[in-house]
Image 1 (cartoon, rainbow, N blue to C red):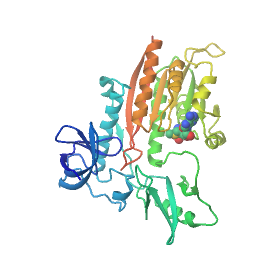
Image 2: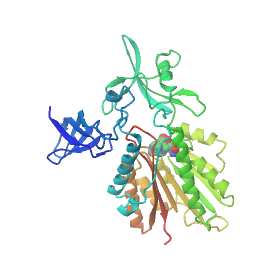
Image 3: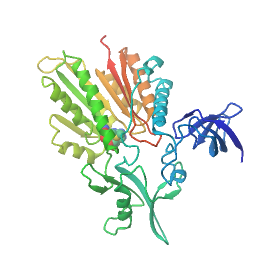
Image 4: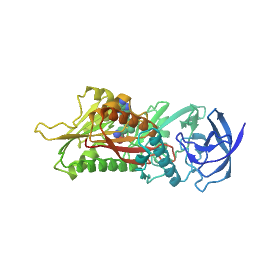
Length: 400
Ligand SMILES: C[S@@+](CC[C@H](N)C(=O)[O-])C[C@H]1O[C@@H](n2cnc3c(N)ncnc32)[C@H](O)[C@@H]1O
């Protein structure tokens, strides 16, 4: 086994820390903390980089903390539990900015607009939904996770990210004859404390979800307020889930600007979520479609922007998109650009796919010769202790 010594300069996407080998190659080090000097064992070597695992901390960084979870070493789900929370935020901020600039989603100057990364009020016990596995052997049934980047089962006693009620509930249902759970199953708790097995997508960090709802509502209502000449608005929420962001947005606009008319359309492929959205008493003047976003967009003639209402009043559109980690197809980004909405809010849980998608959208804008300004870039920590980054980037159409 080759052993190397390196200083850790930063954290990277994928959960590892970054050092440098003596020959100049990048060294991705599992278990390193920015500011550490570590001895590490090389686990993979390629022409351009090496991967390694910390074997000894030679000089501990001031940002290094003791990971509270006993499964930290084996599970791998929270790779940054050994990094202080303030440093996790600083590193996420820098990864987000770098990914958006390098991916040509924003220019270097536009990247300077990025100031705010909203911290999570809870650093642990924030997850209201977790996916677990069960294994039965001679000793009985155990629950656990898949070790990160492998299929290896890791049995757990508890998970410090999960709300207190979830793991005891998962243990109970994993052995219950009344509730038959699969080998891989999800457990969730709702805002009323009701526990359940399975279910469609819902945001997992309640407190941060409220901040996300306020943030998106504030951004969109400020935009609507800034255009006094437009009374009629159409709000299109793509990948809308159960209307988690649709309702707070239209409510804020309607409450604060009763003179405005805002209709809303939500598109989401999971039927269960759309049924939930339609049942919501807040769903007046909203249409929800259970459909693939691209297929839905293909069926539409054009966006409302630049059109007039039946009474001849100008109409404009706002598009919010909050896709899953894989991001959007090229077709979706081109279709969004072609609708020329006056405001676009892209909420993402993966800066790399967000950067790719925004770069594609901007390319379509430039072919169409329409101009947009990046208005804001905001980070939000939905998943403390992990390398996941949530971000919100907004674009505003310039008057031609
Ligand atoms: C990150 S979630 C966002 C949900 C919602 N905006 C919220 O805040 O709860 C992404 C959603 O996109 C849906 N989805 C994934 N791929 C889709 C597609 N191709 N067309 C429509 N919806 C899709 C998923 O079911 C999921 O509900």
